[in-house]
Image (cartoon, rainbow, N blue to C red; front, side):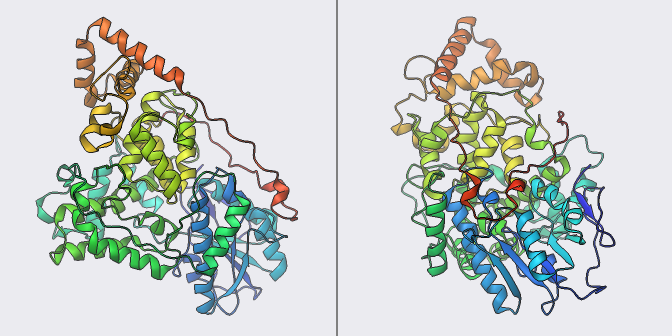
Length: 573
């Protein structure tokens, strides 16, 4: 069974067809107030839950709960961003005439869970129903599925209109296809949205200009900086709270410069469109030491919490192209990231959950290395990626895929541990978008459902697309032996130990042919070098969680550790 399907006619919850029915809660069968629950990634005034609510009758509930800050050890800056954005959104709604019930993380009565806080709010307001827009993560969908019976009131779950493709529409598109490939989905979305179309054909005569978007960047290029926002009093209060409550969590809290209001997020968008987008296409795969952002937008976190609208953003990018301000490869490359990859991975997530996050096609089981948290490694590329992640709660997509992701893949790290790391450390990481990108695209844990081959690389790719290797103690041109780049031996060893599952992949045929032509002595040297390096990796030991009584004195602590029911996993972001 798939996602909860909640009927507006009854308190019972049923599941079918991977989608929600559209209830009709505007029919006022009784005039008791209803709780409109707004989650931390639903900070949009036009949310479907708010669209059907009555300002004169209903209560908007927004809650900060420990359960959401600690189910993985989230980066302090990520938590601060979300909480500060939530508080500013509450003020935005108050100014618009809504009645807001806001529960802070340090409220002494805070139970620490969504279930506990919704239950308390129903009691406080004598509410007759709960309305919520469908959550973005399976564990919360599963949680909400029990509320109608627990609370004895109807629970109406509305579809999320912020996405261009519903989970039902994606399932319809996927049905009957032998393979699910983003490129064909992306073409469908271009036709559906009309973005960068010239009648029935793609603008410029081709769908994808990715071949033009692989230029290495030089340090002599002008690098625009993302717009920075000085924290106001509300944000400073959140930073103080997070600094106290999550002191042991990963990541630097300061400097904090993220936008936390709609107006500031829109200014960040406008800065990107004017200053960085023109070169985004050419250098989107490039990496440079000491250049954290290059021409990337740093807008995904604002999209993912609802401060920016994805279709509006793409239309602005298209307008910049049509007015001659940006080249086609830049506009197309950016739009592909949003209506292609972003919508595609969400579709995969809801098509395969629950169970997708437990997939491990390659049987990788090595613990996550300690340096993913400390940055203490002599590999210059990985040290740069982890240090940047700790400082900014951000790394761009190639750093995630081809540095931290590539190492985890070729070293055989447990993909679930890798998934939980990515979910914890990046400000834009929510499970619907992060899990398929990590498990499918990066770790090939779904066996090729999302991507046609593993994105594995030796040091050669990193040397081509970055300048990290110039300052690294390892020799990127040496395959084995003392001082050789560890990625080189690990790459070939990865192919060797997974040959039974990967050798038949036509996209890897030439690579396996090269491996076969190596002498047995060379292959043995590769295996030895890889094994010696892997033996040096220190596993990360997860610290024990703090006691739950640090949240408050509420009565729902028993519910804060609830996890979703899991379907049996099978071979199938």
